[in-house]
Amino acid sequence: MFGDLGMTIEHFREAEAGADPLGDPNSEFAYPRAVLALRHLGLFYLPLPWLGALQAAAAMAGIIIVLRPTAVKRSIATMLLFLTPPMVLGFERANMDFALFLLCVAAAAIWSRTSAVQGMVWPILCLVAGALLKLYPAFALIGAAVAENGRRRLMCVLAVTVIVFYWAINAEELRLIAQKVPVATISAWGCLVFFARLEKFVNTDAIGLGGLGNIDWSTVGLITYSLGAIAACTIGLYLGRRLRSRAWPPREWCYYWTGAAICCGSFVGANYAYRWIFAILTIPLLIRCAYDPDRHVASWARITLAALICSFIAPLIADRWVFLLTQVANWTFILCLVVGGVALRTATRQKLKTETLKQKSGKRKPLSTTDYGLPTTDSQLPTINYRQQMGDGSWQMGDQKDR
View 1 (spheres, rainbow, N blue to C red):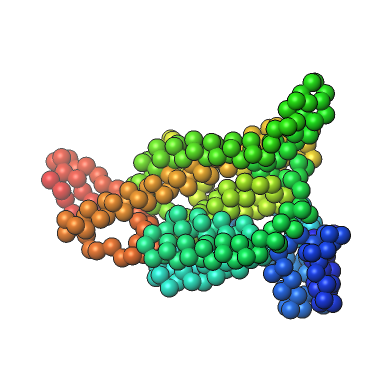
View 2 (view 1 turned 180 degrees about the vertical axis):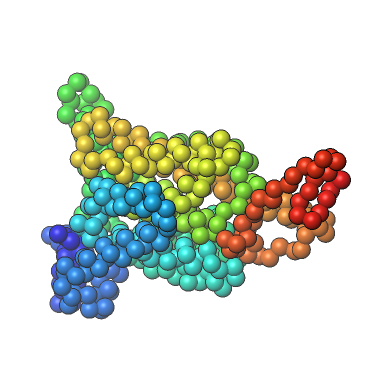
């Protein structure tokens, strides 16, 4: 129980004694050395069961904050989500991904509430701190840079540059981590997982396919993912034209960009199943779009949710056919996230162009550098005004008549 957390705390003790767990080839420690700095918080003095239970409770609270299950059906669905194999594995292992999930939730929440350029400092700091502990939170910063405009985008780009510079200096740590974490084909997801298992099958030479063993299947996986992403971007451009008249709560918008960027970026490699927790950030916006009046938008959201559900309920250890179906679901979900990201960005750009034209014609007030075409609060979402046609052919709305 709480195996990952227990090993991390044990490595804290080794580092406190002056050892280097990452440099030790016999050590299972496979995190950046920045993680060892957490030992100064004194966590290894606390009982492991209490720490694991506290992290699990905090992760549950973070998921509830994201999903906001106020209705009975959503509450039941949230409870069932806690019982899915990836979540149970994460709770049982008490992996650091769940702690970083809370950090990303906080970053997205602060991002959604700030309209000033200076307000981006805190979410950026949260994500930079996460990227030093594990690499993948940097993908959320890349997503924010794509989603934002003006000086807010510039701040995100600068943060990504700092992270790249840091890891370029400490590239040796990434090499040591890669040596200790081979590509997993069980309890894992990512573009390399299917091709790693295919390579094992080919190498058995069961049906005379031994000649294919010389192929670099990891490169094939990356090329396949790249081609799929390009196709998804094309669909996203089309879908974005249908979203240009929509408005979304900033909280859901920021959650989607954070979760989708981390999932799509992490898909480049191989990840243990509990990292699906970041996909939960995309659910609120997907549910909203699933009820969109445009059938194309609704179909995209429903297909994405269906693929996500299949990825969550799939067994961690699967035979050949279940494994293939799980891979189809994983790839479908990730590529649909790419479609959604491109569509949201396209819709935002079209809104900005429209607002800029109105500004030049003098019909609207000048845009601020922080306006990216979305409401800044949930109360600013558009409401529907109902009008009733009168007997004389006029339209009545309140006390006004339009003849």
